[in-house]
Amino acid sequence: MEPEANVSAFSKGASNVLGSPLRVLSGTLIFVASLFCMSTLGYMSAGWPLGDAAYMVVLTIFSVGYGEVRPIDSTFLRLLTTATIVLGCTGMIVLTGALVQVFTLFQFRQLLGMGKMQTDIDKLKDHAIICGYGRIGIQLARALTEARHPFLIVERNPLKADDAKAHGYLALVGEATHEETLKQAGILRARVLASVLPDDAANVFITLSARSLNPQLQIIARGEAPTTERKLFQAGADKVVMPTHIGAERITELILFPATDKIMHDAEHISDARRFLHDLGLDVEVVTAAPGGALTGGSVGEAERRGNSAFFIVQIDRANGQSIPHPGEDVGIEPGDAVMLVVRGSRLAAGAIFNAPARPVKHGRAYLG
Image 1 (cartoon, rainbow, N blue to C red):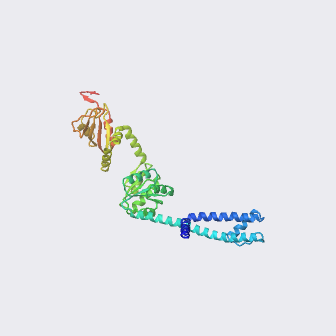
Image 2: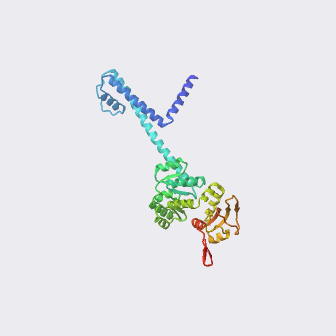
Image 3: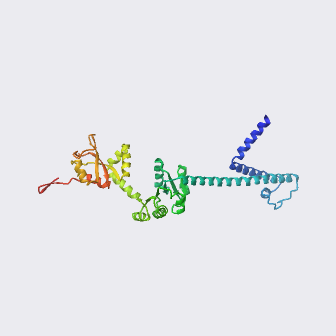
């Protein structure tokens, strides 16, 4: 039983060593380096200089056959040279094989990885293509992941693409401006393409190429310069997003309508309703009826008529805590009321009506403030 146990242990050890080409390569390098040092020390012990000893070992291990550096005229030198030849040549053969294994393994893994990625891309249908994995691309990827919407990232920077893959996203390394890359990304089966590069010229070119490849594709493009918006529409974009304009509008809303942000943040169901209304081309805003405001003191019906159908009032929250959902036309708007509007058109214009000062009331030939 003991010999069988030894054989089993040897087989297990051999399997562990040979199981990884990298382990074989590192082990062989250590063996060759050790042999080189020991043989060099052996020649030096026979009185050879360090340079001659090291040179002799290199010639012997690599089997170059340039001849002996110094005469091998003793039994010790002959035995040392013979051992260096046998062990050195064997080590170099194993080292060469290990290098071939490592290179083949990495190439094979890369081939398998690319093949698997392309297989996953080929399975996509009605997906979104995100061109660019920058600040906006990262936010898009997170949002689409939460919504469980299939998407693919096209990024020319391999480091950014690797970062996207590390987060579990499907990413393709390539120039989105090239039609071949867009075809590889499955643009013919895609539902929407978002070109969010910080380069306006690249976004225009991507939009033009994508539209020519898939006329039915919905294209959303990012623009930085105001003059780019018209070019993107001419190139075939369905929607153009100007991040600087959106940021300015958002800041304006926070300044003019701070109650909207608070209520939307506190009430999750209202946020869901707002997203639903947004799909219908509507939006929700909450304005505070200021003392002396244009609509303060009037009725709901008067306010809606004053807005010329730009909005309608769905709820009024009094300063005393009373809430009036679906207020009738005769309900009055009091100072300090939080008025929730469903807006059609410009939100800023609708809210500005509430913030405008009250018009003076004409009484005969005089005006009463």
